Length: 407
Ligand code: ASP
Ligand code: MG
Image (tube, rainbow, N blue to C red; front, side, top):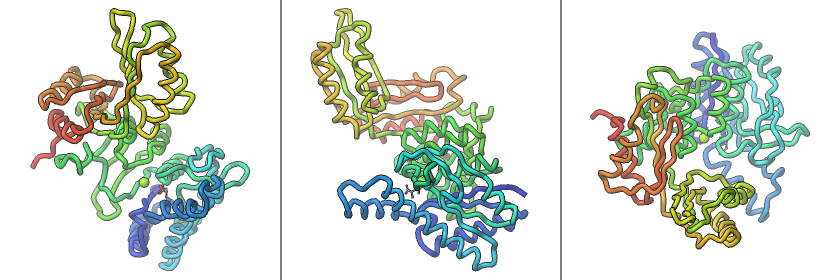
C-alpha cells in the first residue's frame, strides 16, 4: 500500500469526458494494492482566464480579495464533479476546498504562499479509505479569507500536500508526456528525460520549460518528494523529478532552454568608482525588478560600460529608472534592446566536467551567432544572443552536447 498524490491539470479536466477519464485512472490507482489516493485538481482549461476576463468586464480594477473568491470557483467546480463521478461508481470519496484542507497561506491575494497545511481532515478521510479530492490553487489566510496561489498554483498545492502527508510520489498529469531535453516545438530531436534533478528542473522551469510551477519544485526539493510528470492521455512513464544521483552526473548537459523574455539595458561611460554599481541596481531592486545577467567592461580611462538584463515586462520602467540614475552619476547615456534571447545549457554533470563553456561558445561560433552576455552557475551556462537566432542556437547546442534523439 502506498500513498499517492495525483494532480490533474486543466487540459486533463477540460470537459466531462476527460474528467471521466481522470476518474478511471484514480480508481485504477485506488484499486491497485489498496493505495491511499489524494487527487488535486486544476480548473477546466481556459476557465481561470475566463473568470479573470469576467472580473475585468465587471470593473476596471477588480478587488484582489473578491477576485480570489471568484477564481477559486474554477477548482471548486472540478473537485465537485470528479467526486460525484467517483461516488456514483461506488467509490467512497469526498471533495475538500482550501479551508477544509486547512491550506493556510499568507494574505497576498493572487499570489499567496503556503504557510502550513493541517493534515487532520485528509488523514481521517484516508483512514476511512476515502479517495480525497482537493481543489488545487486555493488556500485560506489566518483570517479565513480565500486566497489563490498564483497561475499554475495547483502544482504547488499538490506537491505541498504530498510533502505534509509524506506521500510516496506526487504524480503531475498534464498534456505533455514528460520533461524534454529542449522544447520539442523548437528542437524536433528533443528527447524525453527519464529523470531530472530538482535543481535542473528549477533551472529549466525558470528558463521557460512551462511544465511545473517553479514553487512546486522548491517544495519537492525541500521535502524530498519524488515528482512524476506524465501525460493523462497515455499509460507511458513520464519524467521523474528527484534528488540527483551519480547516473545523472554522467550526462554533462540534460537540457537546453531559451528565454525570449529578457531585455538588456546598457549604461555607457559610467565612472569606474566604488559605490556606482550599488547606485545603479538599488533603485531597480526597490522597484521589485529582478536583474538576471550583468556584465561590466572595465576600461583604462576610468570609465566603464555596464549592461544588464531585466524581464521584458519591466523593461520600460527599468529604462526610466536608469535614465535618472545615469544623470545623477554622470553616465553618458542609457541604451536598451529588447531584441535579445537567453539560451542556456543546464546539467548537474557540469559540476565535474571541464570545457562546457568552451563547447557552448564554439557551437554558437560555428553558426556565426554572436554572444552578447554570459552568466554561469554551478549547473548552468547562459548566453544572451540576438533574438532571431534563439531557436537555431537551441538546436545547435542540443546537437553539440549529444542530446539529439537517435533516429
Ligand atoms: N487554474 C489555475 C490556473 O489556470 C491554477 C492551475 O491550473 O494550476 O493558473
Ligand atoms: Mg499547469
